[in-house]
Amino acid sequence: MTLLQRLRDLTRSEDDLVADELRSEASRSGCEPVAEGADREVITVRGTVRSVTHRPSTKVPALVAELYDGTEAVDLVWLGRREITGVEPGRHLRATGRLCRRRGGATIYNPAYEILPTS
Picture 1 (cartoon, rainbow, N blue to C red):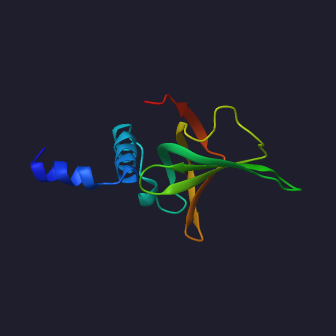
Picture 2 (picture 1 turned 30 degrees about the horizontal axis):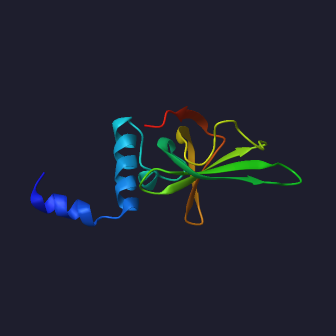
């Protein structure tokens, strides 16, 4: 590592360093960046859950977890669920499903998921 690279790393924000680490973890495990996923493509993503919310509805409740992979956030939406044990902020997940891009946001409905150990 050159002196210039070290100085650049010292001036980077904590968020930039975390995003770099998430991107490299996803790449090493063979997952695709959310930012590069095309609409209606089946993708596998990996990242950290930033928030979990419950969207109550008179028809179908939904649990929504925002997953950040270092490139872009994706909403993982489980229809008919109020909670999923282990899916909580700060957890690392790998999720697979069909990416839906609407109104500028990325969403995967009812993804298959795996809770990963925190490194």
